[in-house]
Every structure is written in C-alpha cells, then in structure tokens.
Amino acid sequence: MPPVRNESSSFHSEALTFISSLLPPFSALPLPKLLKLIYRLMVMSSSSSSSLLPPFSFYVCLLLLLLLLRISESETITKSKLTNTTRHYRQLSYDYHGKTCPQLEQLVASVTSQQYREAPISGPATIRLFFHDCFVEGCDASVLIASKPGNTSGLAEKDAHDNKNLPVEAFDSIKKAKALVENKCPGVVSCADILAIAARDFVHLAGGPYYQVGKGRWDGRISMASRVSFNLPRANSSVDELLKLFGSKGLNLEDLVALSGAHTIGFAHCEHFVSRLYDYRGTKKPDPYIEPRFLKALQMSCPPFGGNVDVVAPFDVTTPFSFDHAYYGNLQAKMGLLATDQALFLDPRTRPIVVELGKDKQRFFQAFSAAMEKMGSIGVKRGRKHGEIRKDCSVHS
Ligand code: HEM
Image (tube, rainbow, N blue to C red; front, top):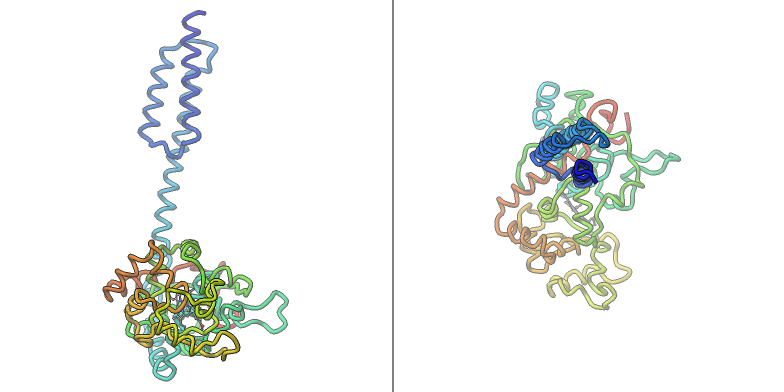
C-alpha cells in the first residue's frame, strides 16, 4: 500500500470522524472548539495530496456551513431565552394609558374601594377571577364573556364547571369599573387591563401589597368552556401536576407557592375538601395531615353526604379577611384547607419556600407581587389581529 494512500485514507476517515462527531452533539459544541477543529482539519488536509479524496475545500465548506449554523443557532437560543425572560415585561407597560386615559387607575380604584366596602367578598372573588382568566387563553378577559343562548359552538368559559363558583360580585366589580372607564375614556381600555388593576386593588384593600400593574392587554376573541378544565388546577392535584401546569404558563416553583398565598383570604365550598375529612384515598380515615381540632370544625360544617352545597369554610382560619402571610403558618400547623395547599408543605421541593414566606411577611409580599406580575402577562394579546377592545366585557365587540 502506498503510504500516501494510507495517510490519505486515514486523513479521510479522521476528517469524516470529525465531521460526524460534530453532527449529533452539534448544538452542545462550543464555538472555540469548532474553530479549533477547522484549524486542525486545514493543517491535516494541507499535508495530504490524494486525488481520491474530496478536495480540501469540501471539508472546509462543510465545516464553515456547520459553523454558520452553529452561530445562527446560538443566536436563536440566546434570543429565545431573552424573549422568555423578558416576554412578560416587554409586552406590557406601566404607562400604557398615560396619554389615552391618565386617570385610569383612580377610576378603577373608586369602584373597587366602594365595592369592597359594600360587598367584601368581591375581593377574593376578583383575585380568583383574574387567576382563572389568565390560566385559560391568557389574561384577555375571556372569562367575562357570557354564553350566547342557542350558540352551537358551545358555552363560554364562564359557564364551565370549574367557574361555576365564581361569585357574581367579581363580575359586577369589573362591569362597574368598565362602565366608569368607558364613560371617561371611551374605547381605549380593555376589560383585561381593568381586571388586572382591580385584582391588585383588592389585594391591597385586604391588607396586601400594592404593586404596579403593567397594562396594554387586549381582550380575547375566544372563550370556550371546553378549554377550561385542563388549564386549571384541581383541589387535589399533586405538586407534580401543579408544577407542570404552572410551568406550562411560564411560572416556576416559587411563583406557585407565592400565588397560592392568595388563599390567605376567601372561602372554599365543602365539595373541594370533603374527600379529606372522612375517607381519605380509600383509607376510611381522614387525611392524617389535618390538625385534629381543625378537622373537627370542618367535619361539623361538611358532613360526608347530603350537606348544604352552599356551605363554605375559610382558607385561613386564623385571619380569614386579612391578606397576610398566616396562610403559610397554617400549612406548617396542618391547617391547609385544600389538599393542594397542604401538599405545598409536605413536598420537599416547596416546603422550604413555605417556611421562608411564613417567616417574613415582606418577603411574601414581594414574591406575591412579582408572581402576580408574571401571571398577569400570560398569553397577552396586542392589536386588532389577535384581540379587541370590548365596550361591554361580557360581549365580543
Ligand atoms: C395552586 C392551585 C390552586 C388551586 C387547586 C385552587 C383551588 C381553589 C378552590 C377549589 C377554591 C374554592 C372555590 C370555591 O369553593 O368557591 C379557590 C378559591 C380561591 N382561590 Fe384558588 N386555587 C389555586 C390557586 C390560586 C391562585 C394562583 C390564586 C390567585 C393568585 C387563587 C385565588 C383564590 C382565591 C382568592 C379564592 C377565594 C375565592 C372566594 O372566596 O370567592 N387560587 N381556589
């Protein structure tokens, strides 16, 4: 065998090995390494002289192509990473209505404060309404649309089973705020923005933090009851399921724990926790992670069968009307109302956050505000192509 041929075939196979080694883990290969490989290939190929091999330019072109792909790929990754982290804040702005409706927040505040005085239940109800809006189709007021009688395409979100307990006071608050805003600034402010502002107002009115609300959402054109159930958590979802669902909305572990802190106010119907009280997971015994006196009180309100379906229990037995961090203390004392609440203290991934937020009210307020801002940016629509600005929040324009 002529040495040149030997040398050449070894060069050939080494070159192909290089190239094929680049292909599968290509996305993981750092640019400096890729450049070094090109350089080595050039050195080797310049010492080879076989005419049986593809020309030197073939390898260099192939590698340059890979290099270009690598660069454009890494740019795309960087861009999409940036988009992911800034997405929430890029689409909304605090002064979006600065020129078109400068008095917007005062207008909404005048309604929410009066509503809170007259019907305090509007507070927790509106915060929950906002959550149910954002998780289904994004924060676009799709939850406010009323089903059309006789509509063949099905019911609107509002009439889905999971939304049936949303108190009318929440819808009323938004309706009143919208009417006032339309009167002063016609046709410019979406129902979705009004809902986001009202939810923040109620958090604050109940004693919670006052955070800035980004604005600029448009109202959605789609509202379908059939899209609700798989986009909302169940009262007995596992932490894995919660993390998966929240993760699919761009919310992380800390957001989950912080947002669940909204259960520091408001009430739940027996149907959502009765399965914990008598026959937990087929054991014929109550859930062992319920404090005995708390269990007794809940059992008195919620019999195993035939109880009044309208009976509710407070989420936070210690300070049910005050937006504070007592919720986390309750979880540590086995006084979480829903299985999902208690699970946050039982799961080793979420427990440290529960403990941390339970120790420090300001830390909770800061985590809650940040998480609400993130939640308020889910699936935001902008412009006429994807959205609308409704006059009446319950009817598409
Ligand atoms: C983590 C998963 C969650 C589950 C499984 C869950 C489930 C529930 C359930 C079953 C109720 C009782 C409804 C009723 O019987 O009327 C409720 C009420 C409530 N939820 Fe959640 N929720 C979750 C997260 C959230 C989030 C993220 C927020 C807001 C940021 C929120 C805010 C509220 C409020 C304020 C109430 C009280 C409503 C009222 O008193 O009218 N929840 N939730």
